[in-house]
Image 1 (cartoon, rainbow, N blue to C red):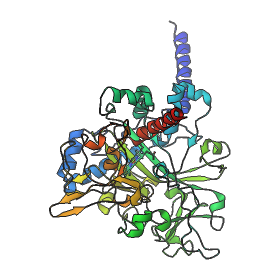
Image 2 (cartoon, rainbow, N blue to C red):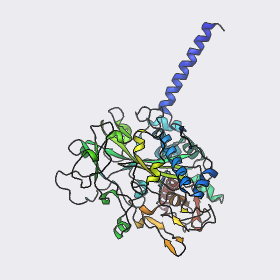
Image 3 (cartoon, helix red, strand yellow):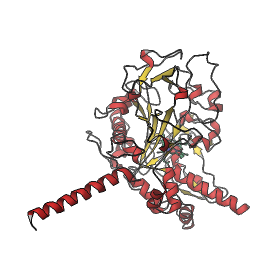
Length: 490
Ligand code: HEC
């Protein structure tokens, strides 16, 4: 080949590579692979034996390793992906991932290609579905706290959630047909207690946002939210009503929508009387997405409200789970005014484990962990609900659960003492997710639990198929089941 010709060919190849590159950057429904940031001590996927070594060891140093692992995942999730999604250039990795709604649609349409042909990707956010499942609707009119003085700031209590799956877990659900009743029924018919394990590098997240719209602003400028007071003592009122944002009663935090950068603030306004320098944050203190005229229509709140240019999503919280362990790893993150001294269920020990590689707005969050159901840790099967509770939850997700949310409670026994969690601020991710299952007999009754030990071979699972700790599979399939049953009874 002549030199000239070779050049032409390589130019053509380059052009092809570029066009493929751009097409991929903008249209992959699966999103970006989870990167592995260079953080000393952080490996992904970490081996189960290393993780269990820390969990079983349970010393301060072991727990610091657990926390570092969670912070490593958090750093990876917030890394700029180089991909555009929903009109957001270089979106953080987690935002590019396939959503629960997209996987549901794909399961019906048959393929990602068919879904792509329906139109551009949209981010459909919904009220916290964990709650709505039990008849609690976060978008319903909220009881006002005390009648706020006329003209006084009043916090916005609404939050919206999504669920997204990394390319590995997303493909696993789509390729194995796990969002289809027929697949799970076939597992039941084959007398298998559970669906097959997900690949170890599967990661699933549940991000939670506050949506700033013009009509919500105080003095046309400040967005007002309630400050999280830390884990409360459980009172009869909390048993009855949970501990949702409306009842936090610990003051206000302000976000100055005219400051797209960061602030020096690290406090709250205890009396909710108005923004001060110590309690007013910039948008840049949050992972945030400001919408513009081109992409506002790609964000769908699932109600009548349309978002417009200038509206902003603030990332308030995120649940994060990975399949590195048989019982998955469980960590959650929530925005906090002073990330060095976060309130319970986070701690200064968790904050101290934050690696220096985690910088920018993602470093303004607190973490909470549940890598075991109880401590000392018990074996996967054949253990006992003994020792100390391990409480791990998110103020923006579980704290609103009253006692009536939980269909099963069991004590954790410690010698002569016994502890029984009854409400959302006493939950453990791993316990509740262990219960995720689809019922195929009338006596089986998948439900929620707070914190206790439960093995995979527990009689609770009789007549069910366990869905690998993923409640979304159980939810999606149970919804198809009840539709099918209604159709039958007509
Ligand atoms: C009381 C039960 C309960 C507790 C406690 C709980 N979750 Fe969930 N979780 C659910 C349900 C139900 C869903 C599915 C519905 C939805 O999308 O909200 C879910 C969804 C999720 C998802 C999306 C993937 C999936 O299919 O399960 C992740 C990730 C997740 N939770 C992580 C966590 C973490 C981390 C914690 C602890 C900090 C936690 N959860 C505590 C019930 C619970």
